[in-house]
Length: 229
Image (cartoon, rainbow, N blue to C red):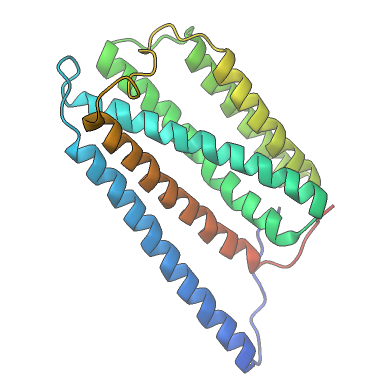
């Protein structure tokens, strides 16, 4: 999808002024929601008690786990919305898919880097042969392919299909990769002093990223209608 700027209007009717005012209110609400969600996640990280072995590094490890959960949810949602668009050819559906995609992919880059940092600080190793880490790189490669299709072909239906396939690749890579380094499901095996903040991180971070995706959707909605085939 091509990002374009709408030509300035020479005569704004009352309806167009109301639409602009409503869009401003929507943007303000979404900025507040994104900020509030990020602050909630930060507070949940801050109140988490230190671990006996990892100390305060536990906060970084748990935040990375929560952020990865959110990231996987975003990729999954983009894939599902892509299926809906393939059936309906609805422009607003595709705008939502694009907004989610443009959030999920940079977030995966962030989470990949954060995972390597937390692994190095916590276990003093970054093993590029580790299956889970290799899986994250495969997902990065898939994301790059989807973006290349998006910005070169400008065929929305093809990009929607690619989003759906990427979600399948992500789940396959994660579920099939054996866990050789990380503890097996450490958060769920912990007490509520860890699980409580973890779910707070997931909830706040999800709200923040979905709000950013909605802001991107608003930005894209101002562009002229392009390919929906």
